[in-house]
Length: 75
Image 1 (cartoon, rainbow, N blue to C red):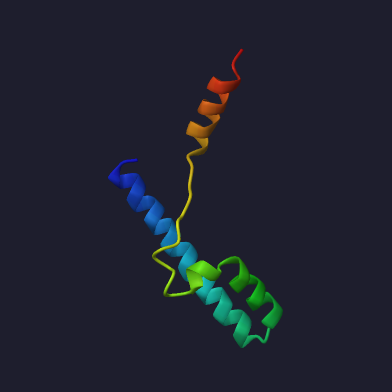
Image 2: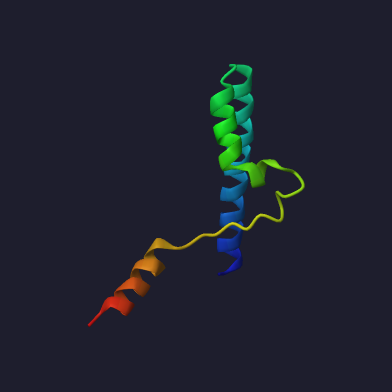
């Protein structure tokens, strides 16, 4: 992975984090407690400031994954 890829992935993760936090706040303001709790349950590690930077983000490049799959399944 080059620096450009790392930066793009970091920016995507930041955008998801910001969306999750904003959506949680909206749901709480709208008294949608069940929705807010479901969101918090899914993104707990990201929403916890003590764990935010320790949570691993796993990613893959779909083209590389497909290429590897093709290599492994070629007979």
